[in-house]
Length: 141
Image (cartoon, rainbow, N blue to C red; front, side, top):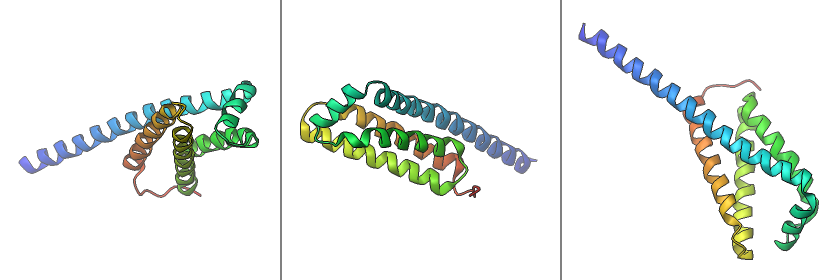
């Protein structure tokens, strides 16, 4: 009788932890998505301001629109969860973008690295919980 109860308790704890992890993953990924959509919106609607910032950092303005599109595609890959490879590449692409943004702002000493650090931290938490929730399970594609 004790063994059956112990199995139930362990199973219940695992289900509770899994539900908690799913909620954390969705909330953090939602916050990350909102942050990325805000930057995409800025890239398209405030192009002049964004291009001035890019120029002041020594970054070519020709990357603004492709970067915005890449961010949208990365978010689609993360939320669609159809291909493990695409999802991993999306997280990798965001990480590279944020690391480059951090280093560029640090070199420029303009104080703009904080937003990129925050984005990197939020994205990292999303990735960690993605791995906890979805683990090594097979995905389509």
